[in-house]
Amino acid sequence: MVSGKTVLILPDSHAKPGVSNARYDWLARMIVDRKPDIVIDLGDFADMESLSSYDKGKLSGQNRHVGRDIEVAVNARKRLTEPIHAETERLRQNKRKIWAPRLVAIGGNHEWRIDRYINDHPELKGIMKQDISKAAEMGWEWYDYQARCVVEGFNVRHRYEQGGRPVTSAKYPAAVLLDKGFESALAGDSHKWDIATRTTWSGKKIAAVICGCYFGHEEAYAGTSNADWDRCITILYGVENGGYSGAHDKIPYDQVRHDYGGIQ
Image 1 (cartoon, helix red, strand yellow):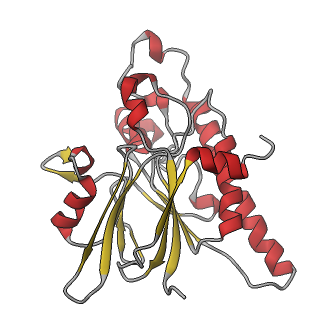
Image 2 (cartoon, rainbow, N blue to C red; image 1 turned 135 degrees about the vertical axis):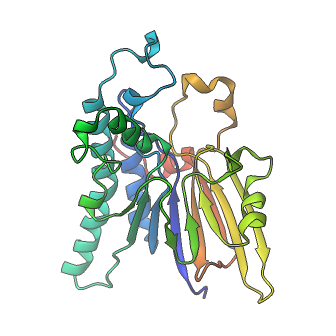
């Protein structure tokens, strides 16, 4: 039997107006079915397209509204979280072995858009915050964008940078992360998936994983890059003190939809 924790990783999911939040229902069912010990949301959960500087002032950026962005993000968080809490309560009431996973959420650069906006509109300080989906209110441990977050010895960050450039822009980003810090790490941001492992002098296997993205729609700004994105959920097994068993699952988005789609 593999010791250590089972960790399910939700990468960039970009809840946004005009795109169904059904994928959070599917994922919640999968989490309840598989019952991981820890669930990690790697950020860019809320897209916050109304605060994008990419197409600000352009036709493509018209008819966006901060309130709608927030409403969609909160709805997505509820749809993901409530079935998990409901299953914990069901097991408790039936006097079964309790399953109450640790829920960890970090901010991404899209949530960081809120801080940039508040900097330009200081009257909103204390009213708006990076945790726009109300993760903390729903029982998640929340960490702002680029704040230090360590889970079972794994460094968890939405984006790692080296020399002012995202490490995820490297040809083999997971290997770069390991070579840079020689400790286990999880990252999102690039929407691509990559893994690298090393064995330390003590014999412990460490890993860095770039975890892809979790949505089915295409983004107009990305053009042909949409086809290069790895849409998936990652599960690591035997995670303990920065090491892991070497076993993992990379579950394609379409498989999650097929296995847990149900009624949308």
